[in-house]
Image (cartoon, rainbow, N blue to C red):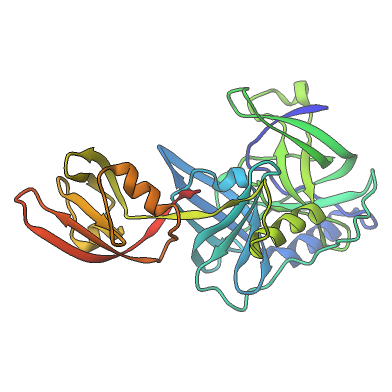
Length: 328
């Protein structure tokens, strides 16, 4: 059992039948067009990761830890193509899998997969990812499979245990922050896993060596199918909830607006600091918690009627288009 930091991991690479650098490069280049760089905002900072396009209308696989806590996401195809706004459809935190949708996408290439489940120790593998979160064209790294059905205790950069993942493909390759959610390829350039964990970048390589862990693609796709088809599971959670785009606080008359997000629904509707929301979607609002409860069943893009009063006591009404809040 190994210990690893849950940092975005770099693709790891090689090929089981053709291990020369030219063959590895060809395999990676053939898949890069269906790989996306993911960037998003979280409270107090930002995230970077990688994803794999699995459907031409913009369904993308990535890790839950890439999208957890994000309030907005963008994804760029091949690290140098079109940039899309992205929405989280659902997540499985226990198995560290998420599915996101590239809004308005169509006709995109998809990653080829090997779902046979045949992977052997010693196989060379090739992976792609948004190394160091620098964006640009996907970066590849090479290595070989060292262990199958591995269990990794995953720790954060602070050394605290985040999760334990089972059934992973472990391999020896340079893993870098920014690469989580990227594909692990076999010799034929087919995806056999999703890169998820790597050795702690804050520890000397001599202490921990090089290794990465990937979730087998069959496991990932089984979870993705449940998310996309809304199949009930104790592990799966819904994606981005809708938000008014305002920071709220309780007040005697309802939910007081402390601040609004520029370009968000509340700001666009004309709400400002000091306004008090009194009704949302036809329901009376008595606190900020009431608004949060109503938003749980709403999704980004939903149009919701909102009533509020300004500090002078004047009543206002508008239909607000919701933006994305953190995954529910």
